[in-house]
Length: 245
Image 1 (cartoon, rainbow, N blue to C red):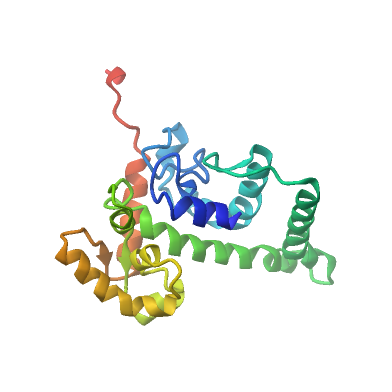
Image 2 (cartoon, rainbow, N blue to C red):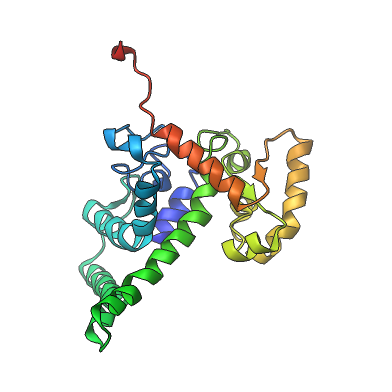
């Protein structure tokens, strides 16, 4: 699933509508790109409670369960990355693996001597924290006002203008994001270990400056998250339509 989502889809078609699966994880709940049809529920997508619920469930329920289930039922990841139907033995192995994952992650605490309130914490708090961590370090890199709808016919230029760095030389940003804070470098050199990206970052920035290519970066998490939240709020506004008046 990760190969189809991240490698085949996202890296090849970054922020390209109907081709980048990362733009359509939950279009019924969030609209993060103009290629997603606007729905009434998008009006409140930036509300702290709605936003918090979506980010809390994004990985455990969304990526690890629903996206997987829909992909195998439809033969396409988020309806944009097609793949060959699994053979019966492969599908059985995959299904058993998913069941083991769910039971071991969410079920086992309730079969211990822990009280239910404590078992609930053990079952759901770790994946909730992980979900927030994952969303924080992935959404603020591409879904911003400057990068979400940018594009270029040159593949490497496209990777640059559709991404944003944050805290590129800040040790905490590098440590907590695992190097994903240098998203431009990650997309231009996806096979390079992230420990080298801080050395590549100033060199890539100079190359972009030399060739007059936009290079988007902000000081740290605060500015990057603010940009993402502002963009989320704008995408929740109903697009102007001629037949509205």
